Image (cartoon, rainbow, N blue to C red; front, side, top):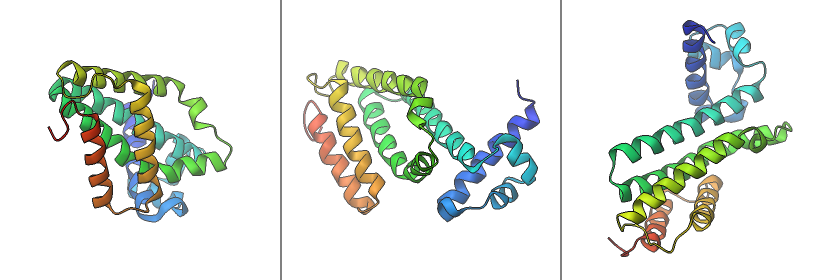
Length: 186
């Protein structure tokens, strides 16, 4: 079990690392991340021995945040809105995590092999949101998880390339969502 101050430092490092990486990309320096987190470089390296370990922790934390959002949406939003909001969030997150996953892959780290539990949890969360939306008649009843995953992958790949302005991605998601709805435009 991690001491509470160590846990707080880890969270601060992860938050700072995300901010620095969003600004500077993969060329971000570990000392800059430590400075922004308000910790020493030694503290950063105690938590994350390598840059790759830090990147892996960021990707894992992002997936955990998505899973937490799925649970919150299921508990607080109407079923149709929850499904479409979560779908859009996954697509938005895809563009942010591509550089990190590419860096991990380049370092020989098989992130998918290390995230099998998270992948199963993500599939379960998407399935639950889909079935909830279908039960209330918001999403077509003839759609199954494999189709949703294929559509998510396609939309996420478009977001990952960064070749499209946000307005095009938003409009594309709107068109895609119309195809998933029980009554297009509803």
